[in-house]
Image (tube, rainbow, N blue to C red; front, side, top):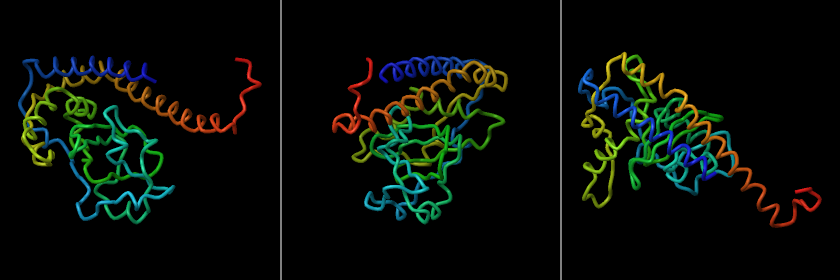
Length: 231
């Protein structure tokens, strides 16, 4: 499991280096990130308390605990009622959405590469959606938000704040160099396999953690007998 994390860190370092090289190319133009995004969060008065979470349902919710520094941990995602899911259509998740924490530990980021059940987000998380895919790829946006450039921007916006918070308007203030269509395609083609492998590794890691957590209590209690296994 640790090996998977290190492998992903290596892959993402390579992707970030390619991204920085691409935007440092002379053939770019300065743009504001917010012009390319749909950005929504849960309205404050619709916030959910942990006491409202259900043991199980057909609807999931990503909260601060399940949005980790490594991405989305579906093993920690909660369950909510259909009513709570339906009341906020603006934050119903789609495959390809990017999630970003905007309170507390700001900058935790996840990519929705799968949706087994209808899912929403808790307060403190932005749903970010690429609205201009013909001009900029979602994987480019995702790694731009993970890059040292955006991290430095977050620090500049929240430094000295008693309660750090990232606002929707901040995305309009973040400028970056948009690559030419040719360079964007080169970036996408070069990183596509690495991007796919990162999430394949995360899914496999998640599966192994779930298997460990479900089997370990049975082993400890003696419910699962492995004495006859030839190890």
